[in-house]
Length: 367
Ligand code: NDP
Image 1 (cartoon, protein in one colour):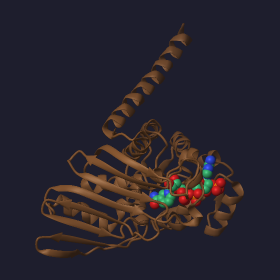
Image 2: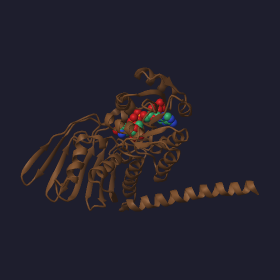
Image 3: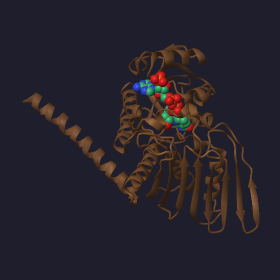
Image 4: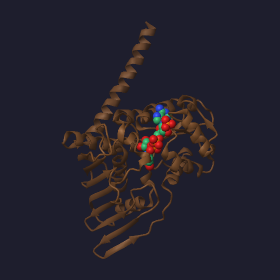
């Protein structure tokens, strides 16, 4: 989309909780952008959602929404298993895509989605909202500016009580992409990549089954990741921990940065620098994380900068989460860089096969 196209119609794929609570308002906060249509897994649910939120059109299927000329951008917040086919269909229909995390259930699928959007010439981004938090942006700036010297270690506290309204597919349906690792750990990994400006290369982890999740899904996890700048990071994620509070800490040779109550959807929390001179509260200009994220996406549509988290960021956070899940299952360390390299090799092979097939078909037709 070029700079003359200021107005964009958004279609929602998924009449979801996240769309209702945050994203419809975040889209409507952008000048010239409007939510024009919705399609969901259940047409009656989509109609009720549209009536509640004042969305003018309801489509009976995703295909019908993608055929609607009033829709130029789609926000995909269906269950995690649906993201891949819906992003591929959106790209084929020439629609720009803001997709929820985790991008997909496999690395090959996530890479295929990014490649399809690139081939179609549409913008693709991942809705990792925490990059837009004032706390995390200041953390990144301070780490970069050397406020704590060389960073050595990080800790993320993101174990919460999953509200009853969200205890559906997340805790019962492995095939939909449930479990705490694909839900929360994927956010932590993206946040650490952003704050540390580094890539995770290795993971060890233990899963917990504390009684909320079923069907073999984990509802708690503790993981340790090694980053390519030498930082080791500890993560604790959960659905069953009501009173721990959330946080992120980055510890360096000369000081520590302590973020409290910042692993959240709301623009809240504090950041403190602790060093030899004492405690220094860091001023934060809080703003709505989702409004800021959608604003960056809309700017990127106009050709101004990049989205807060790109499709490639979504691939890399998923690689880290899949490595944590594999480490839980195997009890062994899993190399994330190798998973990513393998994903690239599989993608290349798939694309070569597709190209060979086209050539073979053309030769067959010519013979
Ligand atoms: P919900 O269960 O509230 O919503 C999921 C939606 O997906 C439902 O409206 C459901 O439709 C719809 N759906 C299911 N199958 C299809 C299909 N085949 N076609 C179209 N729609 C379908 O989920 P959440 O809002 O909790 O989560 C949705 C997504 O957002 C997940 O990927 C989750 O990881 C992500 N998320 C991200 C957050 C963030 O801050 N970035 C926060 C919370 C969630 P119906 O009920 O009508 O059948």
